[in-house]
Image (cartoon, rainbow, N blue to C red; front, side, top):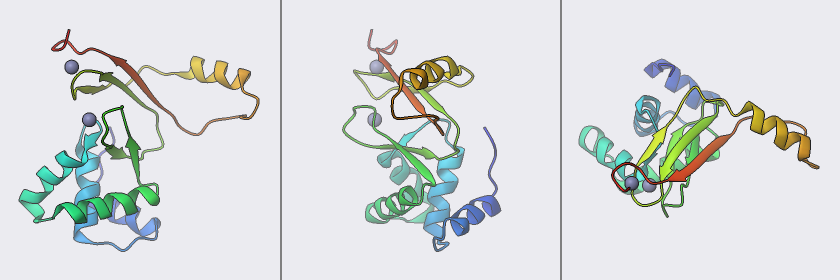
Length: 142
Ligand SMILES: [Zn+2]
Ligand SMILES: [Zn+2]
């Protein structure tokens, strides 16, 4: 995964026409470091310690960052959202349908599936990015 410096993050926020605030930088920096999508609770837990950021502020920042397409929101049927940096690249996840375990898997392209889907599609000619969620039971829940 690409590394983002604080300057990169500030640049991203400016390019999205958002005001650069400490909290916005903190949320994006955290999301640029995690290895897989995280829940809002994980974001709050991590940032509260270091940046004395409250829950409402985290929600507000996530919402504006999402509106500006800087972050991607994923659902996983958990009843709460998960977030990751919007890199424009595909995101593939294995998701446990019994507990909170998710595992991001890289290096398994879905090109074939996409090609076949576009071939069958009546309304789409191409795709920009995609995410894949495959559900099952993790080793702990088997
Ligand atoms: Zn979850
Ligand atoms: Zn599980």
